[in-house]
Image 1 (tube, rainbow, N blue to C red):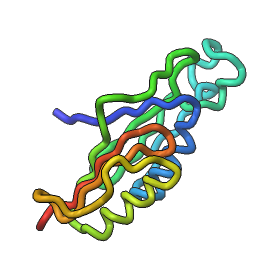
Image 2 (image 1 turned 90 degrees about the vertical axis):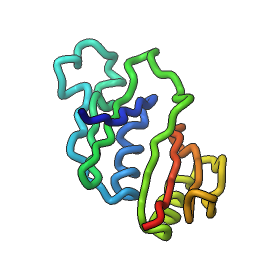
Image 3 (image 1 turned 45 degrees about the horizontal axis):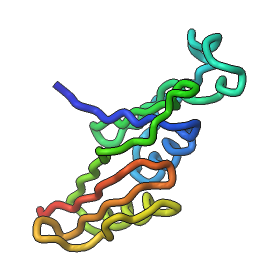
Length: 135
Protein backbone atom coordinates (compact mmCIF):
# COMPACT_ATOMS: atom_id res chain seq x y z
CA UNK A 1 0.00 0.00 0.00
CA UNK A 2 1.13 3.52 -0.72
CA UNK A 3 -0.48 6.68 0.64
CA UNK A 4 -0.18 10.00 -1.16
CA UNK A 5 -1.38 13.51 -0.55
CA UNK A 6 -3.73 15.26 -3.02
CA UNK A 7 -4.14 19.02 -2.63
CA UNK A 8 -7.07 20.98 -4.07
CA UNK A 9 -6.80 24.62 -5.13
CA UNK A 10 -9.09 27.41 -6.23
CA UNK A 11 -7.37 28.15 -9.53
CA UNK A 12 -3.81 28.31 -8.15
CA UNK A 13 -2.69 24.70 -8.63
CA UNK A 14 -0.22 25.47 -11.41
CA UNK A 15 1.42 28.33 -9.50
CA UNK A 16 1.56 26.24 -6.32
CA UNK A 17 3.08 23.19 -7.98
CA UNK A 18 5.68 25.20 -9.89
CA UNK A 19 6.66 26.77 -6.57
CA UNK A 20 6.71 23.44 -4.72
CA UNK A 21 8.87 21.94 -7.50
CA UNK A 22 11.44 24.68 -6.98
CA UNK A 23 11.34 24.62 -3.17
CA UNK A 24 11.32 20.85 -2.68
CA UNK A 25 13.67 20.06 -5.54
CA UNK A 26 11.26 17.66 -7.18
CA UNK A 27 10.19 16.98 -10.74
CA UNK A 28 6.78 18.05 -12.04
CA UNK A 29 5.64 14.99 -14.00
CA UNK A 30 2.05 15.91 -14.77
CA UNK A 31 0.32 19.24 -15.32
CA UNK A 32 -2.89 18.31 -17.15
CA UNK A 33 -5.28 21.14 -17.95
CA UNK A 34 -9.06 20.77 -18.22
CA UNK A 35 -8.83 21.81 -21.89
CA UNK A 36 -6.58 18.80 -22.57
CA UNK A 37 -9.01 16.29 -21.11
CA UNK A 38 -12.40 14.70 -21.89
CA UNK A 39 -13.84 17.06 -19.23
CA UNK A 40 -13.15 20.16 -21.34
CA UNK A 41 -16.82 20.52 -22.31
CA UNK A 42 -17.96 20.23 -18.67
CA UNK A 43 -16.29 23.39 -17.37
CA UNK A 44 -16.78 27.02 -18.40
CA UNK A 45 -14.33 28.64 -20.86
CA UNK A 46 -12.48 30.49 -18.07
CA UNK A 47 -11.66 27.11 -16.49
CA UNK A 48 -10.04 25.53 -19.55
CA UNK A 49 -6.47 26.45 -18.48
CA UNK A 50 -6.97 25.35 -14.87
CA UNK A 51 -5.35 22.13 -13.70
CA UNK A 52 -7.26 18.85 -13.69
CA UNK A 53 -4.29 16.88 -12.35
CA UNK A 54 -0.73 17.65 -11.22
CA UNK A 55 1.91 15.24 -9.99
CA UNK A 56 5.14 16.34 -8.33
CA UNK A 57 7.69 13.62 -7.61
CA UNK A 58 10.22 14.28 -4.85
CA UNK A 59 12.65 11.41 -4.38
CA UNK A 60 10.29 8.42 -4.41
CA UNK A 61 7.25 10.32 -3.08
CA UNK A 62 4.35 11.89 -4.97
CA UNK A 63 2.43 15.03 -4.17
CA UNK A 64 -0.68 15.41 -6.30
CA UNK A 65 -3.12 18.24 -6.80
CA UNK A 66 -5.79 19.88 -8.91
CA UNK A 67 -8.01 22.90 -9.16
CA UNK A 68 -11.48 22.19 -7.82
CA UNK A 69 -14.44 22.14 -10.16
CA UNK A 70 -16.39 25.41 -10.31
CA UNK A 71 -18.12 25.99 -6.98
CA UNK A 72 -16.44 22.95 -5.41
CA UNK A 73 -13.46 24.49 -3.62
CA UNK A 74 -13.22 24.28 0.15
CA UNK A 75 -10.23 25.63 2.05
CA UNK A 76 -8.24 22.74 3.58
CA UNK A 77 -8.59 22.23 7.32
CA UNK A 78 -7.52 19.63 9.82
CA UNK A 79 -4.54 18.26 7.90
CA UNK A 80 -1.01 19.20 6.85
CA UNK A 81 1.65 18.03 4.46
CA UNK A 82 4.59 16.77 6.53
CA UNK A 83 8.09 17.21 5.12
CA UNK A 84 10.68 15.13 6.97
CA UNK A 85 14.40 15.68 6.41
CA UNK A 86 17.62 14.64 8.08
CA UNK A 87 19.40 17.93 7.27
CA UNK A 88 18.24 20.63 9.69
CA UNK A 89 19.56 23.49 7.53
CA UNK A 90 17.75 22.21 4.44
CA UNK A 91 14.61 21.82 6.57
CA UNK A 92 14.98 25.43 7.74
CA UNK A 93 15.43 26.63 4.13
CA UNK A 94 12.35 24.73 2.95
CA UNK A 95 10.33 26.06 5.87
CA UNK A 96 11.38 29.65 5.11
CA UNK A 97 10.62 29.31 1.40
CA UNK A 98 7.19 27.78 2.01
CA UNK A 99 6.41 30.50 4.57
CA UNK A 100 7.02 33.36 2.09
CA UNK A 101 3.68 35.10 1.61
CA UNK A 102 2.01 32.73 4.05
CA UNK A 103 1.55 32.57 7.81
CA UNK A 104 3.80 30.85 10.34
CA UNK A 105 1.77 29.16 13.08
CA UNK A 106 4.78 27.66 14.88
CA UNK A 107 8.25 29.04 14.15
CA UNK A 108 10.93 26.62 13.00
CA UNK A 109 12.92 25.80 16.12
CA UNK A 110 14.43 23.03 18.21
CA UNK A 111 11.90 20.90 20.06
CA UNK A 112 12.22 17.98 22.46
CA UNK A 113 11.75 15.56 19.51
CA UNK A 114 13.56 17.40 16.75
CA UNK A 115 16.54 19.69 16.09
CA UNK A 116 14.12 21.75 13.98
CA UNK A 117 10.34 21.73 13.54
CA UNK A 118 7.86 24.34 12.34
CA UNK A 119 4.29 24.72 11.10
CA UNK A 120 2.95 27.16 8.53
CA UNK A 121 0.14 27.86 6.11
CA UNK A 122 1.56 28.82 2.72
CA UNK A 123 0.31 31.55 0.36
CA UNK A 124 -2.01 29.01 -1.28
CA UNK A 125 -3.72 28.02 1.98
CA UNK A 126 -1.92 24.67 2.37
CA UNK A 127 -0.77 23.68 5.86
CA UNK A 128 2.79 22.34 6.14
CA UNK A 129 4.78 20.79 8.96
CA UNK A 130 8.54 20.70 8.41
CA UNK A 131 10.46 18.32 10.65
CA UNK A 132 14.19 17.66 10.85
CA UNK A 133 15.00 14.23 12.22
CA UNK A 134 18.11 13.37 14.19
CA UNK A 135 20.39 11.00 12.32
